[in-house]
Length: 294
Image (cartoon, rainbow, N blue to C red; front, side, top):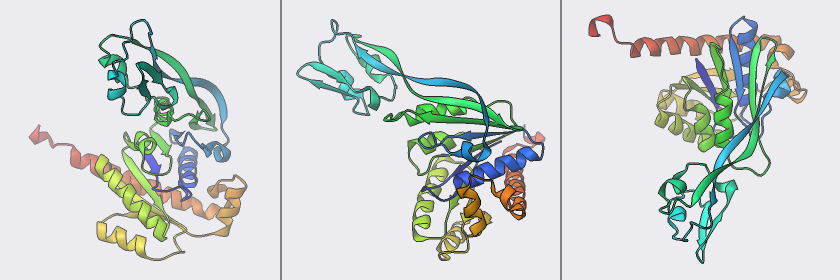
């Protein structure tokens, strides 16, 4: 089962929930892997403190012009959706940092004047924290190929029964790449006007992807009731409420897990897992046709 932790904005508590849920399940003896897909600013390792045992580069393909074949027709530039190619006075200029490696330019070039070369855009590191499997990616400074690094992080999934994905903030391409294969998405928000606005956008995203989801409200005892009202009107379940507890903030600032610093919160994450697991089982039963129908 793949559970993605996402949010419409940063700073809502995704990493706090991802790491504490993953470690809670691992300590119960379950086979769990934590994937930090926030490759621009990965920080799960600060809290779970894994022992890294392997590292590999992430390469992407980009086009290179074969000058003697190129006629400067401009077909390559016209098919590039990312403005990575322009033609100036019959000269093809390529901007590798904008290239998404789709291969369209090479495919449609009438003169076959483009060949693909590789370049490194980041790394993926893999390790363990006790019995918890751990993978994270690190995008090279100045690079834009975030989805490529996220794909490599997800390809590192082993034989674990449960995979927790800590997604990047927002609802853009990196987030969609992180959550699109999930069985369940937990959207983390806070009870403020900004939290509500970005929650609505995130809800639209997961509904468009057709993935079951619920909401977690962090710092649930501040702000107003607008988030709860929205979830009630939309029929969205709130499956986790974390109070605005100074002890949590202090533990976070020290790089400590909530379940270690404030043991009474351990039950919250155990209940969260049971709620998600039970819903997942119900969804699978509803999707499985009866024997008589087969």
